Length: 281
Ligand SMILES: [Ca+2]
Ligand SMILES: [Ca+2]
Ligand SMILES: [Ca+2]
Ligand SMILES: [Ca+2]
Image 1 (tube, rainbow, N blue to C red):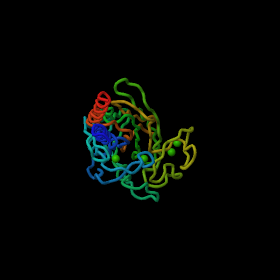
Image 2: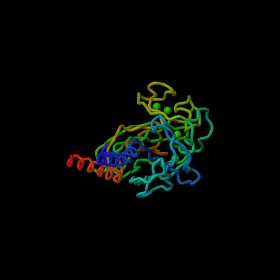
Image 3: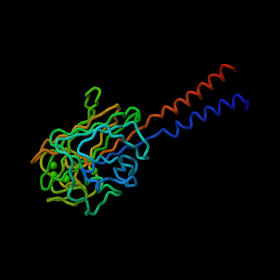
Image 4: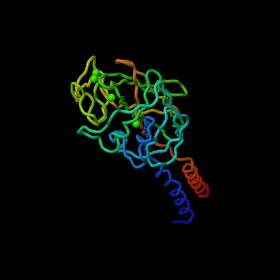
């Protein structure tokens, strides 16, 4: 191999390697603690829905208060991201009475993640900005389970694009009566899965036990389609039941990451080297 060709190849390889290392998917996770430091997740606590995120993930960002502005978020590798979190509601912070017990634990620290939550009656807002600098595209996984006692309550969750006000996703779910995460069956059966995540499927009035297909609206987990936006807001509002309640215990943003600018610059140098080589040839 000629020396010049070897140099070009070396520059190209050096340029390409960091891009390959940064390519792929990433997860940014947020745990609302319900205002209780005891309901935070440690960096090593693994939680979330592995069927969506690929595995249980660590380094959850703990959102401690009843409102916040521009909290910096880390990813599941504890690396800084461009994402910032702001939120506010009309009901503030709450806690489930217990998430211990049951027979079908979903693994990891999910009972701890579900314990504390942010609640809303009619006006909950969770805003994430700086998405485009980190994710090429992403999905939002949202966990909801409030302290509803013997009452069933239906909440609606809407995701809008901050720049255009376009609605990107909307779904409703019933927090079923007498059933909290991992607490076992309700008054007429296990209408939410016992320690598992269940997407609500709407099908008429009343209550059906889980597992049933369709499950008549009971659930504790929602998943958006694949989205692209720089900033989004999750709007939460109660829509039916004895009173309006729209809890959010935590959420995950899962998607394909954009290459880091430094890697692109190195790749550009590599391409310049290739062009220079061709010009001389
Ligand atoms: Ca129900
Ligand atoms: Ca509940
Ligand atoms: Ca129902
Ligand atoms: Ca939580």
